[in-house]
Amino acid sequence: MDLVLFATEALFGITFVAAARQWWARRDALSADVVLVFLPMTVVLALEVFRLLVGPIHPMVSALAVAFLLAHPVFTLRLAGRVRPMPSWILPAAVLGWALPVVPLLILGESAPPWLLLLAVIVFVVAEGVAAILLADAARRRSSAGGTRLWVAAAATAVFGVAVLALGAANSTEVTEAGDVLARLLAPLAALGYLAAFVPPAPLRRAWHAQTAYAGLRDLLTVAAEPSATIWRRYLSVARGASGAVGALMVVPQDDGSARVAGVDGLPPELVGRALPGALPTAASSHTDIGDPALGRSGRSWPTSGPRPRDPRVRAKRLAMAPATSTSSRWAATWRRV
Image 1: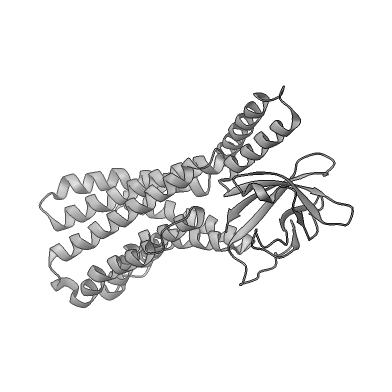
Image 2: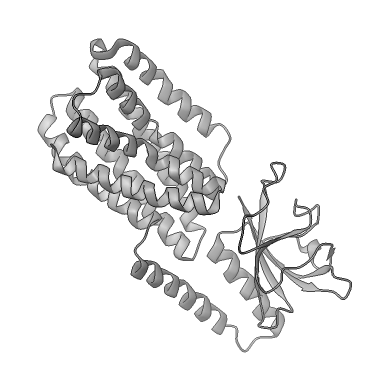
């Protein structure tokens, strides 16, 4: 048994189980895409365990597992599209690029020429590289712990692509030993990176969040002597940067139960002063949709506990709101894609 490969697959399996638990708790599309990213390697791990405990696996099953593993960049691109805007043609192109070499490989089996496997690996590396670039760009837009985790995920994606390239080159060319050694070095690093990005240990998570809080507070202190309007604008800027949101706004409750936009950052200035129908969140609420056509949602509020309502017609934007004062007289909201 190859201990390095088995340990790498086990790390991916641990990350998959943790991601599946998060999806079960949240039941949102983003968590489901994270699960899909780690499913191919988990399938390979399950087959390896089956082989050790039961016996040989049918060659077609092994071939299907490899084909599923080569689809890893497709799932990573889906995830990247959740955290940043992505051109609509990229995902179909990745699926087509995966299918063109993989389908003939499945049909021809052992009689497939080596260059066909190398082509599949090259497509894998290119798509994985695109996914890494998109994740890095999403990380660049965030000044928070989420941004740090996205940087780690982007690095792990790039390293995993290089590891598969080295392994594919070792199997398809004469550079066998060097490629195999490089793959053995890089694959565990990629698995550890994914584990740190998506299931960070508690001390690391606390350190990242503390760094975000410190940076935000330091930013606010630079305008402490400025007028209150300037401070609130900086507060919105900090909230927007920490969440990677499209924009941020501050709303003030009115006597009639509606809300009025008091300030914006990254959103159309004409929103300022606009009355928004719909209830503001209470102190126990974390997500609120305010009924305004400019924001793309109808008025409703979501409690922090219990299942959130799911409306298939509403998927474009979410307002994530937090109280701007202890008395909850103002609320800051970040506008982001979901």
